[in-house]
Picture 1: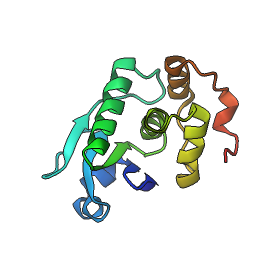
Picture 2: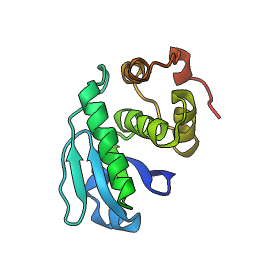
Picture 3: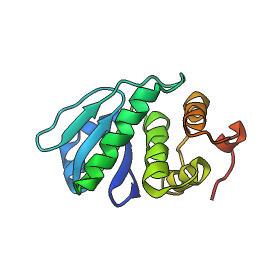
Picture 4: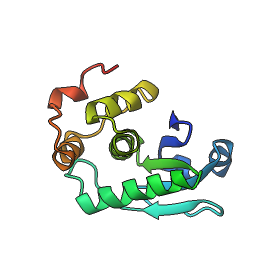
Length: 146
């Protein structure tokens, strides 16, 4: 599990089942993109998102709104997918873009600064690029963004 901000975490599916780990990071809400896991005291939104295919815009909006709403309520939020490197990263990038008014490139750089293995699938990044109207070249995936 990677702390992107004091309130925003990116992780993998197996971490959503680790109650001790979630408690340690004071996770109050989870956006789960692989499989829903309910735990007492943690607000859950499960949105099934496939990796490697364009991101459904309604799923993107719903997920980003959920994370921002939970942050506004003072909750630490974990965004989790299967391996914690693609789908969850794409949503974290969108959240940072909207929450902090960053460009997609800046947001991805911020996530990678805390999570060096972050590698959103090109189809997901292209979806973000089209939705937000920002040109993000494919080469951004292999660049060392600082």
